[in-house]
Length: 347
Ligand code: NAP
Ligand code: ZN
Ligand code: ZN
Image 1 (cartoon, rainbow, N blue to C red):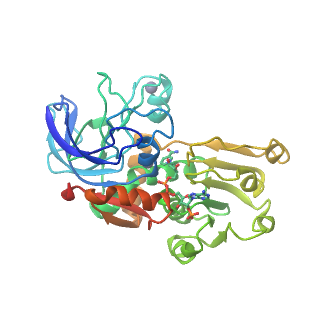
Image 2: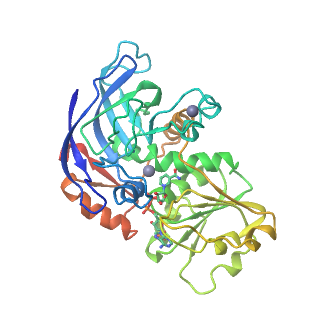
């Protein structure tokens, strides 16, 4: 067994605190990773606090993981000791159903997607994520990280990156399209970068007046402040696609009113409570209200290679394990520019 030190939540109401545990000994197709950096995703907070009602404890969060390969199983072919690798939100799936065969393991039709934490592996053991010194994963779910990217700033690509890249690709965002990104947090700032890189005219919707200049630097052609009276009316019916990256309750019907006929609003944010949708917000112009979850392994590698080629990483603030609870509180206040990354040396 691989003795591991990390930080865990022991219940929905306890703060993150040091915790020692074990990962399985790497099997024939497994890779043992020495974790170097792990991004802080808002999903870590939702799950540690059981806001989605499916939490398993003790919980070691973290699914934006960058590290180096420390050991490989006898049948591993993709990696060797010393390689810089990443692990995102999944570490296994059934690998046989149609979705898995199509490279959409996050939508495994048998419900056998094994998430990096807050999940059970095929042996029934709890999975533990990147807020810990080591990780063991099958090589099929481990990603290669382009050598030209700063490893700490590449960590958030493993969740925030792929979660925004995948729907922008799926809905064919590119030149001639008008795209809106809602919320400038970890996901939103990657959504801006990708939409801009794909050549779409991109607007950011934000509740934070202090983020306007950053949004323009990150790729927004236009920034729309949603706390201003009457902000929505002048943009009604003008967007082809809106990617909603908001973590809390908000009025979805206002954003639907901004879509053109046949436009799509895709949720990637997962607020705790349901969002009430008015039928007339959709039926009047054949609009779609959709959702998307992370992205498959093949597409995650494609996204990382795209980032390598175009030199795209996250804008990060480094933080430490003793400060993780404070960092979470700042995330909850929409006060992070634009992703916290934990340095495993601070464990
Ligand atoms: P984050 O960094 O906290 O960003 C969320 C942003 O939403 C904030 O920066 C803020 O942007 C905006 N916001 C927050 N509260 C708001 C409110 N009450 N009304 C309007 N806007 C508000 O979070 P994140 O890590 O990017 O994650 C965002 C959401 O996506 C979370 O729910 C997370 O669980 C989910 N997620 C989903 C997937 C998936 O696969 N679908 C993957 C990862 C994360 P402004 O300051 O600009 O307004
Ligand atoms: Zn995430
Ligand atoms: Zn499957």
